Image (cartoon, rainbow, N blue to C red; front, top):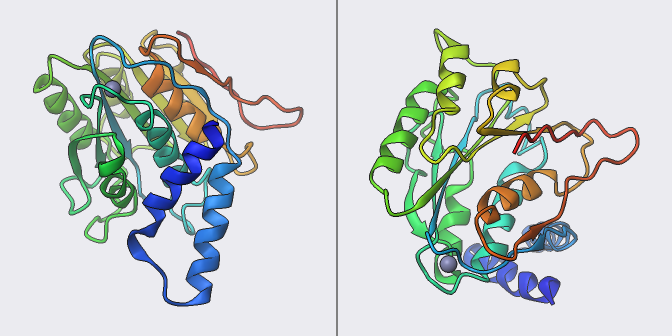
Length: 253
Ligand SMILES: [Zn+2]
């Protein structure tokens, strides 16, 4: 049933740039097929305190060597949001997106995760054309703190997708600040790099490591787990730990 539901949502999201030529159509078919193969688990019911998920993406050169190469992070993040959004009945659960280059034209202010908003959410999950590819987390983390402060009625969850090879003047200090995020529900998705000890040691930070060759759906499951963590009855699928996989989940919660 989840599969069917997600396919419908997928197509509504993919339709916004209806291709007029076969190549693009085939690409969209591949994408829909890829995403519909990912199982995420049970999204549960809307929590008493609505959730605001803030996703921060790093689009620096070390991440973007190709078209969304590590774990298809944009597509998979969107899938996780769409799967929970399909079960959102309160209409108050929201997502916001930032990048290390924020402010950019693709930043998304808090938006409902319900079906009518999935296209704009999908559009925001991309490399912004007006971004410089910053490797500094500090400025966008500051924005995330500000956003959280404006939504005291929400349970705010922070997800940062990066290799955490940061150019901030004091990288460990910036990463330690992640652990102080309001609500203490922080997820670091570490792309193709070793997780920094300062994050692994932070009690409020769940760390997921994603490498080239990690099982399909690793990023989606990390985002799904973050978004569904406070939903009653939610049963996120555990990260795959296939033999020989480079993927490890170092969650401490
Ligand atoms: Zn809801």
